[in-house]
Amino acid sequence: MNTKIKTFVAIAFVATVLFSASCKGKTEQNTETKTEQMETTEKQSKEYASAYVCPMHCEGSGSDAEGTCPKCGMDYVANEEHQKDGHTH
Image 1 (spheres, rainbow, N blue to C red):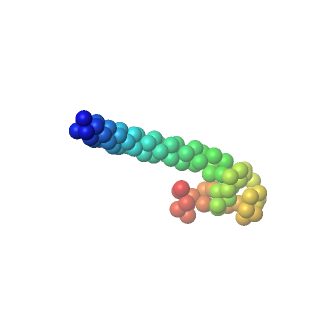
Image 2 (spheres, one colour):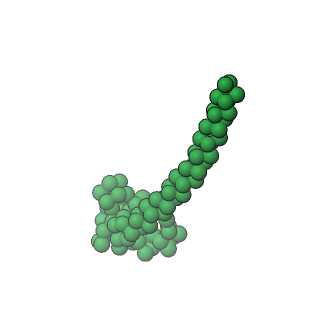
Image 3 (tube, helix red, strand yellow):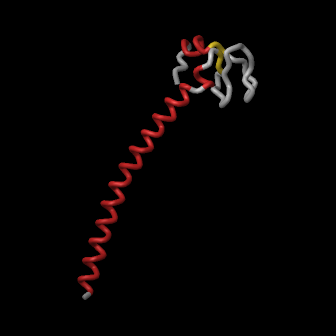
């Protein structure tokens, strides 16, 4: 009887490890996909796509006219010039 219990516990342990490993890969893949989607959405949002943007890309910033960021107070910069400086994030 003791051998049957040990065998059952060993099989249950192996099954748990295999199941956990297969789920982990799916979770990492889903996380990568969500991260890519968020980055794409961010680059299309107002703080990235406006004519004038905050250098810090504060949420809700960005304008079609010069001014200052309502969040941090920094002066807006021309988006075209900002991207020329290598700020392609």
